[in-house]
Image (cartoon, rainbow, N blue to C red; front, side, top):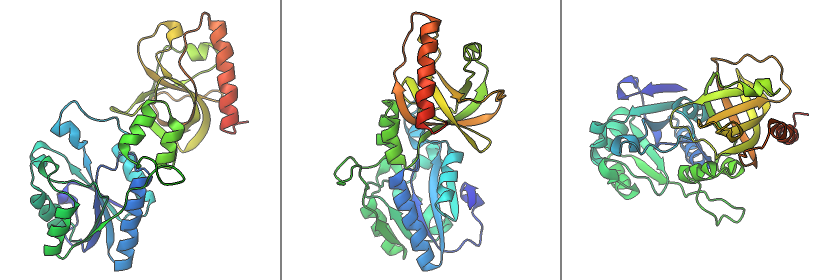
Length: 314
């Protein structure tokens, strides 16, 4: 898959393509449906498929300080999109000047002049251009004048009966923020993940027999609610069952919120300085303040036992 940052990186001989545009944070199952349709339509037409996304998130430019929690950093988003068989990802740097382009300017510059789109595939709520003035109706109107079709894919919804809330990044963030990582996984089609570099913490876990990887997460990451979770620690392609703590460790009166993962039954791991990922399978319990270290150790032993069972570590 080709990866471009900015229109200037698109090859000059790039031919016709089928395109979709959006933030695609999380690349959840609704996004996957649209992207799969793009790949399918491109293959039918004998052209290439392109996903257009933005960096930073548009809200951070339009309304500074309102950046939503990120479900996946840009490199991870590109990996997930590549897994769907897309030919190219175009990341457009989202600047103040870019945000002021009209829908017509955006359509001409990106879809017509740069990508030579023969078809654009979007969801019904798609908006584009300055102040999100463009919608799918305007997109279709512009497309007719440029020999570019528009296909609208219905929203995918939760629930076996198909009568639940539509899949969206907003829904996923809400589920993650409440600690419902199992619900988030339903929307994402995989466990929610956070990434970052392992840094030195207070090292109390090591002293108590449960050495943890203290993960300094990527800025703006969508961190689950405080509590203890079963999940996995991913290091250099290896996926290790883990018990995960999110919070301030109130037993020791800490104030810094951390994400710490104990790789179950692994001894001698040296992870400092490594970029790792933590995946959340299920919420086990809330964060508690214990009267003694002994009481905390008893609960940690139970947490690890349950995490081991849930992740089939045993």
